[in-house]
Image (cartoon, rainbow, N blue to C red; front, side):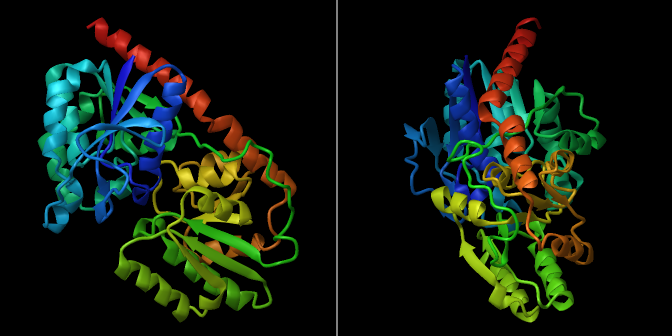
Length: 394
């Protein structure tokens, strides 16, 4: 089975959705699927340092073909990232693949790939990466409404299935009245160590400060401001409490500067450590050293970093808008709190004693049972087969 995954970027700077494509393709290849990635050399504001454009290469163990991308100087279109070379290659080679798995909407590589697949009669799945949620559709609303009317509605309804990673993500998209079948299948996580290998530790780090960790892109959607304001409230209400916050991630320079100023204004600058962008062993070390991973996001269709925290044995504190929050609440692998500073401050106060051993065990168990890439890849392979069988019968 030859399957081509099309994604605008596999840069780690683009966060979990881009990282997940590499892991997904790797897991599928382990299950005998001939899967590969077609993408651009996007790397945030720059170009990906590890990708050679115009030829196949092995990148992190999987076959990748990347083409140059050009971002228009007009702000509303900057993220559209045109890539004529990608479209030209796809027009010539699309029919060599039995199926396409498209990742993302409202971006030139994915939008054009879906249109070409429709015209060529090649079936495709679309993973919407949360872009059909009300919050996401409200951002750059005019551009997205225009694109939906012009082409994306036809792309969505031409999909053999729309891939949602949680039931909550599927339910949020229901208002659009799409006629395409839906596939609900989570993303997985690859931990650097087998589940259960992290030393068990109850409480807040053996008598030291309770260690909160925020690890994500620094973007307004993640609502780090709410966490900083909540910690300021916590400090005023419990001045004797010992805690610290590590902030791992990067974003637009003016926005990061505003966040840093907020810590000074709130009087918590001395308790905050800015780690910058972390990946690989440094990321896993940050996750394992934390007592709590905190994400008060306004909207997350999945929450891959939260699942990575669980795999590291670190319980999480999530807003209900993080889709995996329901799984966390069900399994006892962390706490769920409204993201407003007042409520979040109360939750953080309750967390000052650190997580229990049973909560740490629940975190590891949830990651191992619900978010194993090997299990998910088998289910995805079966979904591909069903799509191909249905397409052959038309």
